[in-house]
Every structure is written in structure tokens, then in C-alpha cells.
Length: 414
Image 1 (spheres, helix red, strand yellow):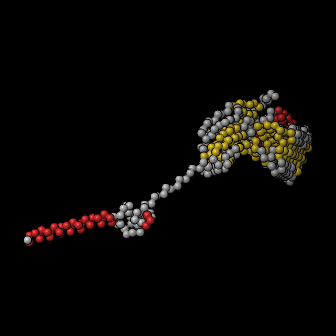
Image 2 (image 1 turned 180 degrees about the vertical axis):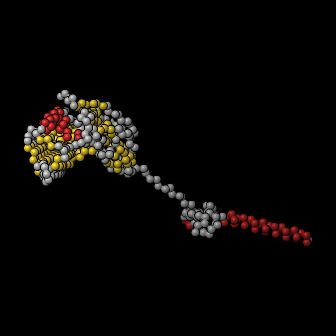
Image 3 (image 1 turned 45 degrees about the vertical axis):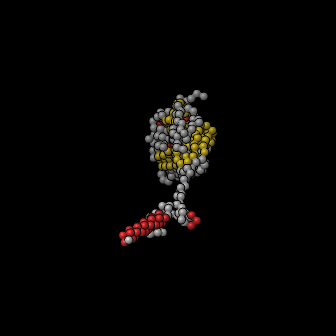
């Protein structure tokens, strides 16, 4: 199928990833693509309208329309006027030239939105989805009661939803737009009729082939535009998007590319942390399979944390995605080392006292409580033996001296 002039694809290369001792890359994703939509759908003069009907516009209760209200070619607008009826904080164009022109511009915008080549097809239920900018198509689109849809992008981001038949927004639902994006650039092209449930918080411009119904207390930041049928309201607040980008302002989404380097090797029993990073618009989210036991991945931040429990090598597949094809996938090996062995203190060999009973070990410390302070430390020999020998020699010497002296004296007397 030939690509619409309104949609073109820009191919970009895929960044390579480095090798590391503890992170071995086995495969990476292929080429990535950036989808560029040439700005928001041009609503022409219909951009100032909060409500535009074809057959009738009917209101019950104190509805507030912040923007213009128009009808063409029908002639019946009811439920607006003095309190407790609805209030229009803008101009009312009832079957006049301005309303007729707004209907023609609505028809043109409807055709452009319907002609766009989808970036994703086969949608039905929108509950729980977080969608990056792009074109999304399905048969009958719905958001279940109390459900939530998140549109994550930037100020120039554009979303176009193509419902071949109906659009049903359940009661109590919420559509949230993040990252600086705006309801200005959210469009719902509906092949038949759209219904917005009680208390729903709806965002974007409805371009319905037939009719639009907003039930009790539903709020709309955007526009309700019906090409051939009625717009029916009940105690609603409808605020036409303002300060919107000029039609033709580019909006780009870029497929993710994993950019993180190698983590350090993990050690069993010790806290571990490593963060996966990836480029892409909008910001990617992450999934992983095969993580070592004890480690988990935070899908929003890419942080792998925890305390690994088992040594060994694990093959881990990490995927980064942001709704723009293709996803970035890499397979790595994360190694967990065994915990370091704790060294036991080396015992001090006791000193054996040879004179102790049975040769039992005896350790004597200087100044210990077991003996008087000043006693010499035990050296491993008995000091009484040499002291006894020295004393004996001294006594023998003295005795010999005395004997010799007596002999000399005896010799003189003779």
C-alpha cells in the first residue's frame, strides 16, 4: 500500500552495543523507524467549535460549552439559554454560513484522518494502554467502565484513532495526556456514532460520521463534531482545545535503541544494581526474562536491583518498547560470583612448660594476675639449675681457699 502524503517513515540506524566481561551481547534489534505525522489534522474553521451538529443539538441540564456551538444544515438547537439551561461561552451559529463552512471543514478533516496509514491495527479495548504518538485503528473501539488510557508524548505529538464503526467511552473512565502533549493533537475518527459515558473524562476531537452523545456529567477537553447526525448533551462541560499548534507542525516518534553499557559482575548474597537505558520518543519502558534469582527489573526506570542468591551465569533478554516499531531487544549474560569465603583467625600455639605436670601447656604473661608484677616472662627453661651450679662452684672455691690458707699457716709454725 502506498504511504499517504500525510504520513512518511524515516529509517534510522540501530546503535551497536559494546562487549564486557560480565555482560556478553548475543544479539541486538534491527533497524529502527521514526514515524512523522505532518502536524495535527487541519480542522479549518471547525477548530473554534466545542460542539457542531448536523441534524440537531439537544441539551439537558446546566451544560457549559467553552467555545462555539454550531448546527448545519439542521435548524433545532434546544436546551441552551437562561439557567438552568446550558451556557455557551462563545458564539452560536445556527444554520448560518459559518456553521455550513465549519461542516465542510469537518468533512475534509474526517477524510484526512480516515486516510492515514495505521501504525497499529486491530485495536478494540483501550483500557490500560499507554500509547505513544501514532495512528491506531480498529473496528469498534471502546474504553471499559472506570478504565484508563494514557497518551504519552511531547508538545508536538499527534494521536489519530480510527474506529471503523463505533466509539464507546465507558462511565467513569479517564484519558490522561502526559509529557507536555495536548488534547489539541488527539483525534477520534468514528465511522458511525460515538458515546461518552457518565462522568467520563474525555480528551480529543471526535469526528463522527453520524452522531455524538455525551451522557450525564461527562467532561470533554476537545470537540464533539457530528457530520450528518445529532449531538446530544446532558450536564456536560465541553472545552474546545486552545493554543493549538499550527496545522503542518511535524510530530515525530522514534523507535527505541538500547544505549546502556556493561554492568559490574554480581556477587551472591550482596546487593546489586544496574540500570538499562534506551533512547526513543516517547520514553521507552522495559521488560526482561531470565534474570538471576533475587534480581528484578523496574519496567518504568530500567533499574535491575536486588540481592542475587545463586552463583552462575544467566542469559537475560531485555526489551525496550515505546509503541513505535521495532522494539529494541538485546540478549546478555549476567554473571553472579560465589560469595567470598570468610577467613578464620589463626590460633596461637601455646607454649609448653617442661616442668608443668604431665607437660601441660602453660602460658605466662608479664604483669599477669597469675604472678607478681616484675617477674620475668617464662623463656622455656628452668633458671634454678644454672643458679644451683653457680652457687656450688662458688662454695667450692671458698672451701679450697680456706684449706690452702690453713696449710700455709701450718707450715710456718713447724
